[in-house]
Image (cartoon, rainbow, N blue to C red; front, side, top):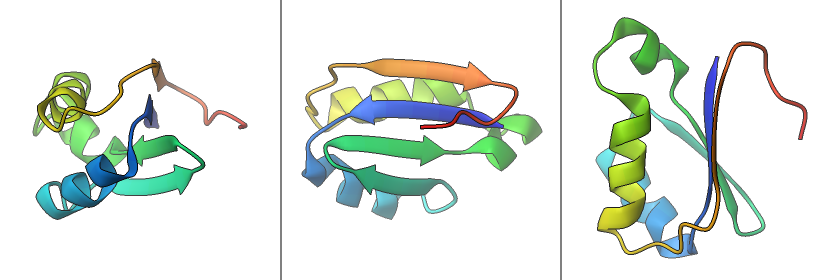
Amino acid sequence: MHLVFFSLNNRVVGEAFNHYKNIMFQLRGNEVIIKGAALAERGEFSLTHELFSLGMSFSGNLSRQTYCSGDPISL
């Protein structure tokens, strides 16, 4: 499983959901939890690069990012 955590403004979530339909987004406060394990495992795109670009392109307030692969993380 690959998880990417961003602290972004809410506008980014809606825009991202429209652009990346195969990635699941969850909003927890100001933290966006983005899950894209299936796409990353098939190598269809670079998960970390794409999501970093996504945050920057919508001028989100990218205050924290954590990349993790392996076991699920308890939040």
